[in-house]
Image 1 (cartoon, rainbow, N blue to C red):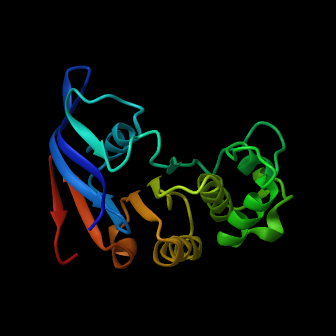
Image 2 (cartoon, rainbow, N blue to C red):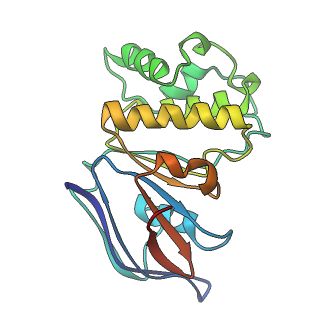
Length: 211
């Protein structure tokens, strides 16, 4: 297995409160990984450490390649009840992330097709359903060809049909496009059949066998 990320002896505290203690795990190329655990257990904090938004107190995170060269697409938790304060189209949302080139338009078309949102290219993002907004944010994360996609609670606030559509898209990206996926979720019962590996963070961090 080709290892993309290796987390070693990771510790993190916030205001002198230990949030993460001695976390060890690795993510391999092609994995579809779920991280679950109780609210406040540090799942989102762990993602922010991997993404470099926070620095660990101890331990380290090694990447297969130099961190600047390992393309990571991140989709943060979205509050679908809030709108952006000005009208903006799906295309404009995605173009915020695309590296401008003569192929920019083609890239936007390609990622919209991947998430089955081609027809909504010029729609107002604020008027889309929560599931549609989530797909646009996935397209935004995909536009620079990431090797790994990282999600924080992608199904929060979505109805059952939207959850299923979302995970089918992620399954396709993982199986047919070779994109490694890491998801923090509290909905393990729904999502477990999509994951090839599941970790639980609840005081201790461990891989769950026979989910």
